[in-house]
Length: 240
Ligand SMILES: CCCCC/C=C\C/C=C\C/C=C\C/C=C\CCCC(=O)SCCNC(=O)CCNC(=O)[C@H](O)C(C)(C)COP(=O)(O)OP(=O)(O)OC[C@H]1O[C@@H](n2cnc3c(N)ncnc32)[C@H](O)[C@@H]1OP(=O)(O)O
Image (cartoon, rainbow, N blue to C red; front, side, top):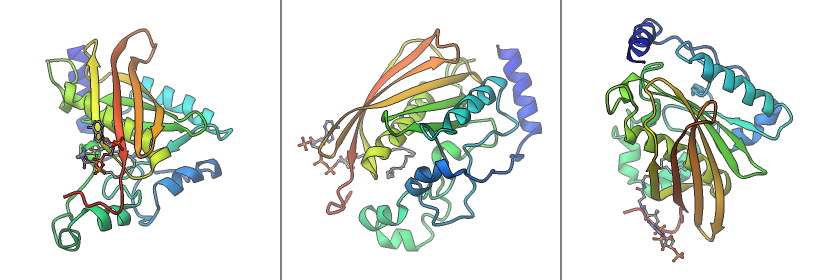
């Protein structure tokens, strides 16, 4: 495992910076377009295959892209910088305007997209709107190591939070994590692919209750189970 990861690391370095061009979204992806506003069309979509993706990840990606063809599933695009979902609202309601106008945010980027290709979080999220659930395909790279050879629990928690956030945002719009509860059942091998199945269990006023499980590609290994509470942000309230 470690040897293959080292080899993988070498090839990842060789591949740094190379990304496949983002194909045009098909018509059935329009809801995702609406969710993630296209206020800055120049923003690159990172939820697409790149050369660091393993065979497993590419295979699963292709399978889910097929499921998108009838419109039951949609791939959620992912931007690196101002993940543009209603960011204007977010700025207006929750951030100090001086910070927004000034230099403070100029270097801001989504935590999970801040690594070079293949070294950190490689993932794509698919949404099934009718069933109120998402599937996140995640390959955790060598910079996410905790115990040697395995993913750091914080990296798994981060990915669960992102998967939950997307699942909750589908129904709740602008949401924030209020509670995350994770049971780590088996360590996740570094550089392997896991599948995070999330679902909205209950919507109660501004509260969105979600749950997920993290499994191996063959579904035989249950790595983690988690529940989360997300709160739909109240525009009349300030975050500070
Ligand atoms: C961060 C960006 C969010 C905006 C963008 C949204 C979506 C983005 C789109 C797609 C997502 C894509 C990628 C996602 C990427 C990353 C996700 C990362 C998410 C985060 O990284 S996010 C950072 C960590 N997160 C925080 O930093 C939150 C700090 N926190 C607060 O800012 C407040 O705490 C807040 C706003 C949560 C609530 O505040 P509030 O004033 O609006 O609401 P209030 O307190 O009144 O609670 C209302 C009802 O929720 C119950 N309630 C509240 N908290 C509870 C708890 N912990 N346990 C049990 N019940 C709880 C109350 O008991 C009441 O219940 P009831 O109505 O029954 O009385």
